[in-house]
Amino acid sequence: MKSSYLKGAFIFAAILGAIALFFFTQDTVHKIRESQRRSIDLWVKALERVVNASSSETSDLSFIYNEIVTRIDFPAIMTTAENVPVTWKNIEIDSTLSDSARTAFLNGLMTEMDKQYPPLEVTLGDSITLQRVHYGDSKLVRALQVVPLVSAIGVALFLWLAYLSFKYIKRSEESNIWVGMAKETAHQLGTPISSLMGWIELLRSTNDNPERQTQIVFDMQVDVNRLTRVATRFSKIGSKEELTPHNVAEVVESVFNYYRRRIPNMGKKNVELVALEAPDVMVKMNRELMEWVFENITKNAIDSIERGPGKITAQIIDDGKFVLIDITDTGKGVPAKNRKDIFRPGYSTKSRGWGLGLSLAKRIVEDYHKGKLILKESAVGKGSTFRIKLHKQTQAA
Image (cartoon, rainbow, N blue to C red; front, side):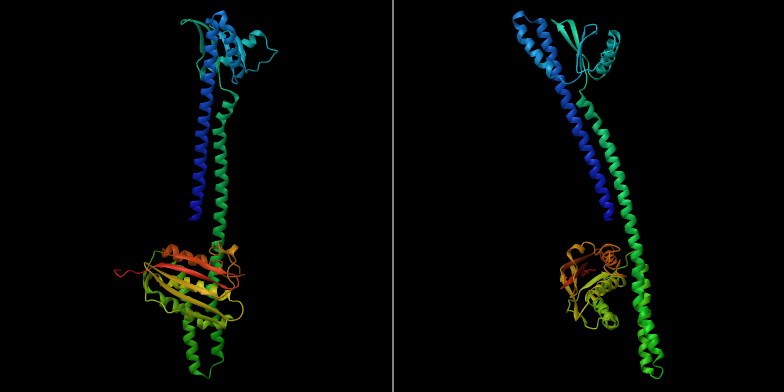
C-alpha cells in the first residue's frame, strides 16, 4: 500500500513538474516575442520618421535607427512595397548563391515568417506603403519551443524508469514475503513439533509411571492444540474481520503462561515474564490473531535476552478511547540504524525465523484491528519496548 502511494506521489510530482515547466517556457516565449514585437515597431517607426523627417532631424533619427537595428537578435528582412528583398539581418546566406537563387531563398524565408507574424509596413504619410519588414522568431525562442517536447520525453523516460524501479521493489517485497512466510510457518510449527517429539521420548521412558504418563498426554494435547491454532491463524490472514470483545489482560496472561512453560526448553531458564496489574478493559479483537501478535513480540523479546537473567514485562494502560499494551524486555536492544527496518518483510538478524513475524504482527494490528504497533523505545544493551495501541470496547457496544 505504501509503495503504491509512493509511486503515485512520484508520478504526480513528475507530471506537475512537466506542467510547470511547460507554462514557464510558454510565458518566457511570450515575453521574448513581445520584446521582438516592440523592437520591430520601433524599427518601423524610426524608418517612417526618417522618411517623413526634415533634413535637420535626420541625424538624430539615424542614431535611433542604428541603435535599434544593431540590438536586434532575431531574423528580419526589409523589402520594397512589392516584397522585393532590400536588406536583411541575422540571416545566414550561402555567399556562392546567384542573385536569383538568393532572392528565391529569401522569398521562402519571408513566406515562413509571414505565417508567424504579419509583416509591418513603412508608410509615407498615411496611405503610401514604401517598405515592409518581415521577421521571425529568434534562435532562443525556437530553442525554448523545443523545451516542452524535450521535457515531455524526459518525464516519460523518468516515469518509465520509476515504473521499472517500483516493479523491481514490488517483486523484491513479494519475494521477501514468500520467503518470510515459509520461515515463519516453519518457525511457528517448529516449537510444538519439537515439544511433541520430546513428549514421545518421555512416554517411552515412563511405562511404569501412569500418573506421569497422564501429565505427558495432557501436555501433548496442549501442543496438538497449538498446531491447530497455527493452522487456524494462517487461514485467517486476509479473511474478513471477525472481532469479538476480549479482556486484554487475559489474552496477554495466556500468552505469558504459554511461554513460562516453554522457556526452560528454549535454553532461557533465567528469563522472567511479568504481567503487571492491569485495568479491566475490553477490546474487540480476533483473539487467535492477537495472541499471535503477543507471541511474536514475546518470542522476539526472549530471543533478544542472550545472556544471564532477563525480564519481560507487560503493562496495560487505559488511555481513554484506547488501550496501550507495552511489552518491555531487558535484551540487547535494537541499533538506531535498524529501527526503521524491523517491520519490513524479510528483515531478520537471525539465520532462521522472524523474517516475517514483526511484519505480520504490524499488519494484524494496523490493517485487521485498525490499531498501531510501534517500537516505542530501545537502547543497545538495555532493552526495548514495543507498544500496541488498540481501540477500547465502548460501554454501549
